[in-house]
Structure formats: structure tokens, C-alpha cells
Length: 338
Image (cartoon, rainbow, N blue to C red; front, side, top):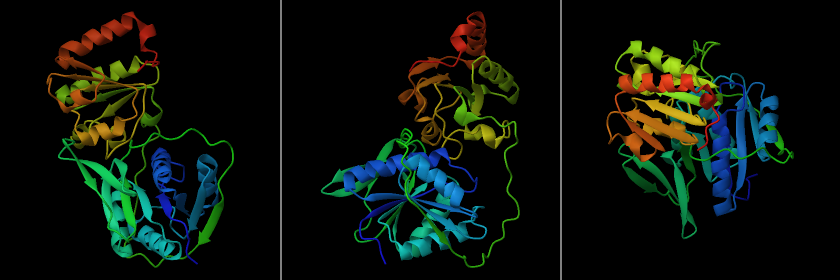
């Protein structure tokens, strides 16, 4: 039997065995869509076992949660996830399927859309209502242009939603949503997952950091990272972040990467050192309270979003900043006002 009312289905970020912040952002985005459309929001969690994780999502969001329990589903594998989600859609169709725009999300979303005959809109960062229909938007050309898209009429739509698009909502009032568990057996995969590397125990906890000092190629050399680490250590709850080019160079491990292909963070202070600020990076810091950019280029893309810009040579400015904070340690407690 098919669901009668339109559904906005949120596919929870998986593979970690815990509730991920990006899922909370998707539920917030879905709630905004619900206000515009009147559709029901439902969350899908995959795992093996899945009941405890599904219950945690229901407690957090207060909406209906469907747990799909299948052998091997707790370890993300695109082929398996597409098969399970296709089967779910055949049983309970949804009008909109929201997927996090993460490395896993953008891998399986297009394949799922093809299997469902659905529209596929990637990198969505907003929407508006026009004549009773939703028009979705995304940034293109490095953030210089905003493109608007509409799903094909009469078909479901699979959307990958950019991190930081919607701020997570506060905790629910205490009334958990209903939980349903669907136990299925997926078809045998044609690909075997051999190994998955996990971050080391001493990896930076960027999502919990109060202050992040992030480094980009503009720092000039790997040796200058010591200055960045020293500056981060002077802030209470400080951590070191990085742009993708810096991680690609091998100067810092991937766990430090902030942005569309890294982590989404929301510190009180985000201090960008030698980072140009392309959209792929700034998508990861949209919820930062205060953004400060230090760069020699006054026209760097960061100038469009930074609250404060310091146009200076890092090698001259950072020693002065470190010296000033050391003389006034009470100013570096991480409690920075936006």
C-alpha cells in the first residue's frame, strides 16, 4: 500500500553508527520544505542492527523514522544502499529524497535517481516557492553565479543538499517520533569492501572546537604550520583546520580538512590564514559565528563572507597576533562574540 500524503524523505548519513550533524541539517532543511509544501518529513536510517540508531534519530528529531536493517548495511557501500533505497521507494514512494552532499551521498544519489526515473539535483543550497512549486538553487562557477532548477513534473526528485545549508534545529520537546523497522536481504554486491580507514584517536575534534585556526596554501611552507598550531593552542577549545589544497599536498591529514569535501564546522571563531575562500571551502563554515580572513590579496573570495579581513603578509602578521594574545590571554578564551 502506498503512502497517500507527499513525503520528504531524509536519508541519514551512515557508516559511523551514530547520529551525524549533517543529518540534523538535512532535517532542518526538510522542515523548511514542509512549511512550504505541507508534506510529511520522514528519516531513513540504514544499519545492522538498526533499532538503537533509529530510536536515537526519532528522539532527536521527533518525526517518523524508518530503519532498514540488512546484512552489511551498517558499512556504507553504494551498490547495497541504492538497492535498499530503491526497494523502499517502490513500497513507500516519496516526492523528495534528500541526501547529504558528502563523499558517500554524491556517489549513490545519481545512481538512485536513475533507478527511480527521478530528477537528480546536486549541490542544492536553498529553495523558493513559485506558483505552488519549489524552485531549488545552487552555486556554480566558484560561487559567482546562482543557478535555479525545478524537478521534472510528475517524477520524484533526489536532491543532494550542501553542508551548512540549514542550521540544525534545537532539541525536540521530548516526544519521539514513531519508529518502524524493515528487515530485508539485499542482493549480493558485485563489489567487496576490503577496508575502511578510520581517523586516529588524536584527530582534531573540529565540530566541537570553539575556535579554529585554518591554514591554506598561502602560509607558504609546511614548516610555517608550527605558527598556526601555536596560534590555535592559545585559544580555549582551539583546533587546527585546513583547506583542501593543503591536505592534497600532504601537509596535514584529511581529518583537518574543512569544506564541501571535508568537515562542516560551526565554531565561535574561524580564523582563515592564507585561504582564498572558494565556495568549496566556505560551504563548510556557513554556521561559524565570526569569520576572520588573513590574506595578502584584498580581492580574495573570502572578502565576500568574512566579518573581518586582514590584508597583510602572514609571516609578518601572525607573530604580532601571537604576541598580543600572549600578553592578553583572557581575550583568547574562545568566547568570541559575533
